[in-house]
Image (cartoon, rainbow, N blue to C red; front, side, top):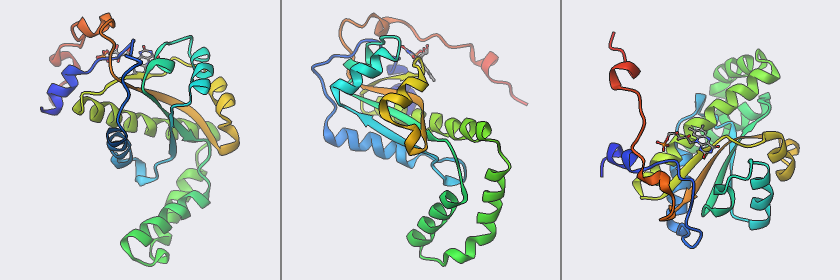
Amino acid sequence: MSIVESLKWRYATKKFDTAKKISKENLEYLKEAVSLIPSSYGLQPYKVLVIENPAIREKLREAAWGQAQLTEASQIFLFCNFTSMGPEKIDEFLNLGAAINNYDPASTKGYGDMMKGQMASMSGEQIINWTSKQTYIALGSLLAAASELRIDSCPMEGFDKAKFDEILGLKEKGLTASVIGAVGYRSAEDSHQFLKKVRKPMNELFEMI
Ligand SMILES: Cc1cc2nc3c(=O)[nH]c(=O)nc-3n(C[C@H](O)[C@H](O)[C@H](O)COP(=O)(O)O)c2cc1C
């Protein structure tokens, strides 16, 4: 199946079949698809919580206007973005690259200083905005990979981020909740699966220049 066929198949699942769980192997595949997606500079300024714990998911559901996907999906991928991007994070990233590709980290000092300068020039709010944007790219990869495996999903930002941060103790970890990818298998009772896709005409969405 092509990626376009898979994307036609997927839809934002409202009701998951609680009896069907994603296999360990498929879960690893989804995690890999999230991990391999690019981020600005490659910094991956986020952490992804894969949440299964039913008690925690009950609490999260309450903080998400009661949306059923929070407790009914097989897993919840919660993308959490970094709330700061200090120089130590850049050094960590450069050291990882040097170790993986076997070069002297000192050779990347100029590049590192440039990145550090850019991060330092942004306000706290701008940093959070920028790191949050990166998570949406990773979310897209999760949704696409899931559709390839015929795993259903629902992207979600209808939740109280401050409450999520509190429930999961994210602030203390330098993180804040950004966006959710709920994954699992659709319930036969989910009427949304029968709706046709609503998308703008191609000539309105795209302009050739
Ligand atoms: C970033 C984002 C946030 C969304 N938040 C929610 C949400 O909180 N709850 C929900 O049921 N659907 C949510 N959706 C699903 C969209 O409404 C849905 O993807 C859109 O209407 C297109 O329909 P389709 O995904 O079925 O093709 C969200 C989608 C995106 C991309």
